[in-house]
Length: 79
View 1 (tube, one colour):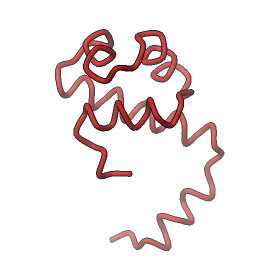
View 2 (view 1 turned 135 degrees about the vertical axis):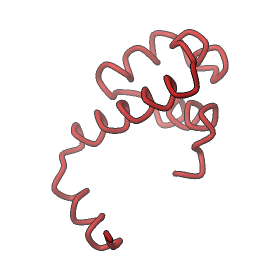
View 3 (view 1 turned 180 degrees about the horizontal axis):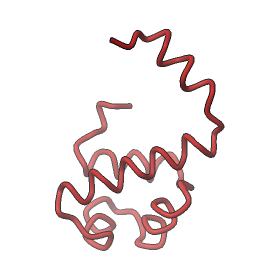
């Protein structure tokens, strides 16, 4: 079982870029699990399609857009 201290240590070993890519991969997996296209996620979340595409490709996104996507995917409590 992983403790919070171990989770914090694992996070510290990753660069911000690694964390961004990991968040993007998780969000994409959740989108696909919900049977949403990038376009439908963009419409439902109010985030532009270009931002959704860029996020899934590079991990770059504004905090507001990330939270809008998380809310749409019903994962806002994860934050």
